[in-house]
Image (cartoon, rainbow, N blue to C red; front, side, top):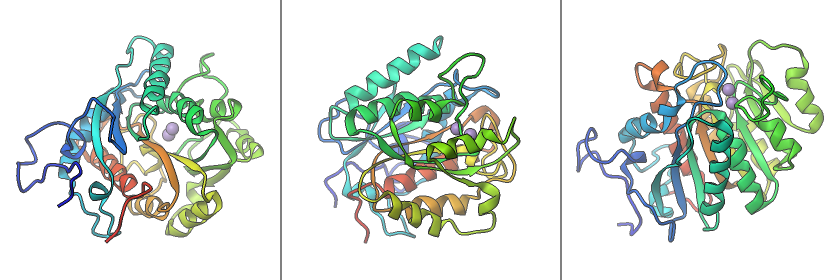
Length: 315
Ligand code: MN
Ligand code: MN
């Protein structure tokens, strides 16, 4: 038996009871001794269309009760390898996006004083800019794997420079990410101009549009990205709207013609071996997710991310 925190088994306590933590892991307030801190950022005031991601963390936690600790396909045993706990939600200010962004960076600064990998459940994608500010302050500019229907590189929206659609332009401008090691995967949808996507390519971003990936395994793309990034620190940000709305309808800005669930799993699994220093899964909007399948899929993708964190053993 492992001496590390384990999720409560569905064979020991009925899945519909127990704590509403991710996979029913222990909750923690102190970070000492933790390798991985799972947290929620329940916020939707940075979104431009449908709201509801403020309920994302709670619903992802609820659906995660279905998950079991061992990855039957990859052999990963994340909870035997790393000490993980759910540290609850950040206390964002639901009346102020700018104050929430400050709170997120300060919270991450405090978390990253410890040698811990933060794993966030969003929340809309605006949470990732303040996270990257803290990550870059701790690790320097990071490689970025960004899976999304949208490039999120607008200059501003309604005059606002910090929204869920401006994240990666700000991260580029502020030097938080290495542009030549920034990968945007799953882009699609209608645009305002061709430059919506192509401008970021001129910064060095590598973009893989969804239609270029239709009907293909993403294993080789993931392995290529892994090999190109190499040893340095990497942040992975996973917007659930990268998936086709058939698989993940419960999201704020859905786009047809997206990735499949198996492609999402192939991509994450191929990232095994990277030095992932943090990750997030964002844009799950439970009010638009009547079956719970979007939150369930989000919980599973977070689990797959836990399975490729550095130090996770396979057996
Ligand atoms: Mn996004
Ligand atoms: Mn998106």
